[in-house]
Length: 337
Image (cartoon, one colour):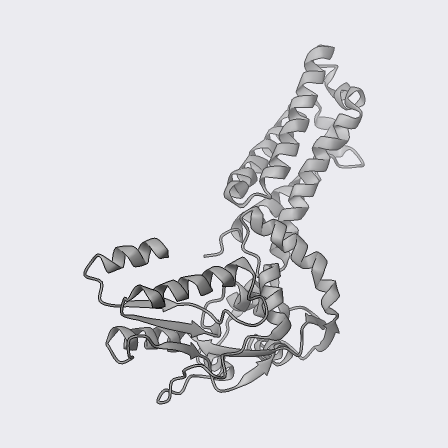
């Protein structure tokens, strides 16, 4: 951002419209908000004509991050477990944000304006989740408040996922913000002449369809699908390594001892590698395709060398078929944008 401001100051850029966030309150010292706050201060001190917009939780037709998590929580069957259920949350429609950006570019806002964008109401997280549940067309469910201490293992795992490239909305920054709620600055500037749509009005303007229900139900299953595949493949490699002689015995009728042992170890390390790489976001797609290729290779090899395994009571080959389906399902939901 600093490089952008410096370049703008040396060019013909007449106005910088910066979409920032409320950077005080809960989570203010987290790097995400701290860097935003530093960028806002640097822009104000740069001398450029600028307008800073600070939207509350942005709702719209599509969902990502926090709004995706809202829909996922709303779709949980029977009970709705919520941490910080009573925290207040202000919202703003993405259409309103776009309209105000357009107004800023058109010169309708004064240079130096630093303004919060939020509808006049503030719902609790509980009310917002229930509102989304009604929007999805689901029957009522009992909200179960969860102590904030229960969030620590979840945020710990979400932070690790973040370091691996996954954009989880349950990371420590989001949870720190939610401990206080998402509220605009009461002493900040507001829009005196523009009424912003409420959360209910935003959802009513964008009726849900079956694709929204599928997305909401799959959202929390996605990390379980990925971690389940990772665990399955890593254990598939680790367990034979613990007893390599026994694991290689199936290959002895078809090749020498040394080759059987080498092939067993190679496939074990290959399984472990695929299980590890699927956890790293930049490599996840390649790892999933690798899982499909290796599984098909195992099935082909097993069918050629020992076709009786298809009729084995424990079903070592048959059990690979659900793994293939789970891999395809994970590929289908891998992209987030």
